[in-house]
Length: 288
Length: 248
Image: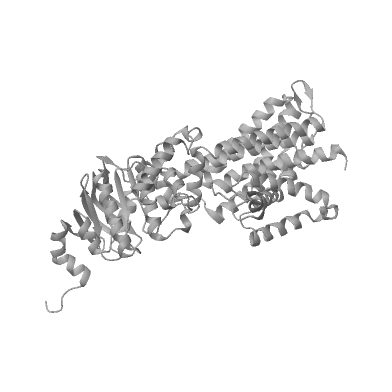
């Protein structure tokens, strides 16, 4: 494996770690199970891709737009989700994922099935970022998201989320407006997925509808479940493991989805809180 | 402090409450009793906003509250516990109480800036934990603790919101004799601190010894109200609980 190759894998891991961390806020903290997270990722990626390739907008503006638009769509799609709970919410989010991919695929403006190509390299502080630079850049963003997540864990919004997750009626009885906190969760989660989308677009230089399909949502969820929901370290571990593992075990490449499915089943059976979650093996080892 | 006026509630064909009116005065301990299915919990759910009455009005501190979100009513100073305990199971006792302390913060954007485990909040939480006799369990997860303790956690969490009006839904159910006595003491202590209490209960000894005023529901209707000794002698109440005497 060449250095560039490893750096590229680090970039992908960072992007997926940000995605798992953002999904963690929604599922692990607020208890709103979503199987459509790739939709927000895709909206962030397409926002940057269209602005950069079609309108020649500079990097920082595309970044800002991706975060804001994904956050806003998170908020909007969060609204109907207030009316559905549990299994129905899962189905609704899957539906959202399919709708978003279809919009990318069938509406001309979004480039159709051939996607959007010709996205320039990210120009940051007057420099074109090549592979090593971009992998460092995504690492900085991952660290920023981790710090943000650690901060969230210290302030009251985290308790509002936890209250909604653990018991909605009890949450209301202590003054937590359940819909308000669900909307917070969808918005923050969407905005962070938008950030990941921006990074993806500039890493790839092109975007395709299938980059954001339902299978990608499942991958993100698998990373989260494997690492440990509700923790900060779990999603990062999950993203790095599931990005590097298939590369290390080349023969597994074609069976990636099979591997993910298997991991979900095994984790649910033997490590229901994830490797770094409550009662997880890795957590026990680190605590010693 | 709380005024319920002509409240009725219908669930499909079931008339759960029929034209019920009563008032809870400030600083009193008021009990709502009645046989199973009398509509007591429905009344609680209407008072704190989980369900809307089919007709009638509810006033809390002179403001009409029926139809408001429960979190809005909580903001006005109403706390409650549940018949089937609803502690936050994965939080520790301390965290449950800290969650209650956040009441003033939840509706504002300060949720993004206010640190939960600040010295001030922890000190306040520890005081409440001590008051509710939970100091041995401070850092234990709520789900592993026995039912009696979980009920106290619910009370502590409700107190932590700064509520001056508490709704307790069958606080003594499932408790042993000693726990029931301790609970009565705790409720008295809380009430002496200036908190008004409205509770539902089946345990008559507990209710008679604790309540200043009792309201009795049967089949969704109010059949009596008064001081414990008056209610205990009331014929309709005896009838509702024991059935009609055959000789009559």
